[in-house]
Image (tube, rainbow, N blue to C red):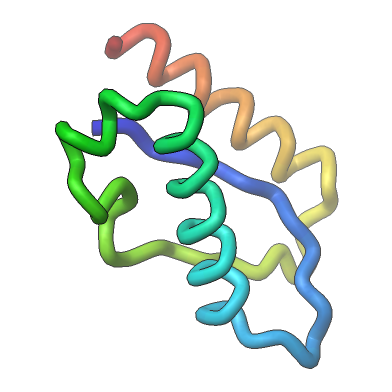
Length: 79
């Protein structure tokens, strides 16, 4: 299993659930187009059902980017 970390900006008028639904749906279609063998392996459910979202609040952009980079490094070490 893999984790995906994204750092995105969402307009206040858009709901997070709508953004995630579109993001996961479109990206799954793109992945299946590029890798048809995954369609047989995963069927219609490429992504896990849930997601975790956090607002950055008082944390600056550099702190978020550093966190994501550290997570990538941990994944490489574990994988």
